[in-house]
Length: 236
Image (tube, rainbow, N blue to C red; front, side, top):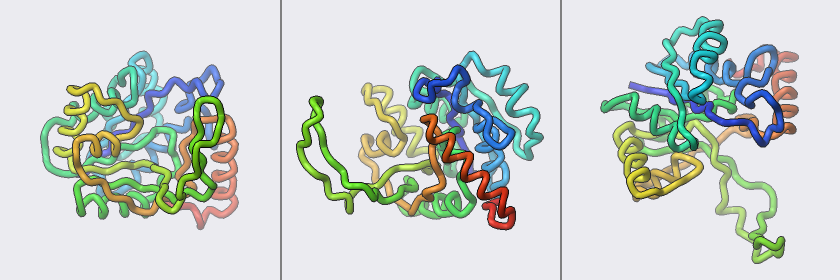
């Protein structure tokens, strides 16, 4: 069985908008709606869980999920105070079982089927696989006073994306261990690494952007504009 957990629990403070970033309009729909549509189109996906702020549960069920008329039934769950807590809520709701789970940011609406295919294939190697893109800028290590401490070798640096894909039992155990020991991370690969497991990387997609800042929304609108000008080139 293949699951997807879509995490859309952010407050949007960095977007500097009164509307949470996952609900901002993009090409006529909320950002998270595009993300749900992208996974709903994936033919071998079995179940989708959407994790949202607890106060938004009914809004998301009625105003986000219901109007989309998706082929998959979407289970909408409350998130926690941190992304890590929200993911654990989704993993717990799945129960025990075989298969894999893709954990994806709700504000990455441009995930394409070839990337999902690569992650599903890659997870068979070690049980843990993420997409990532090479760093292209020069990377500086800087102290709290803005003084450069050194230059990193960018050949060994990749920028992590989602969907981060894992065997179900491995990622559930890793998250439970992290919660028990008080380990906090900003992505699920870090939690699996903390548990002592190996995570492999497949090539990411530079258009698979995470919409977090106001300028990201401008880039996202440009991507959609390009797709709309050339419908035959759209990924779906």
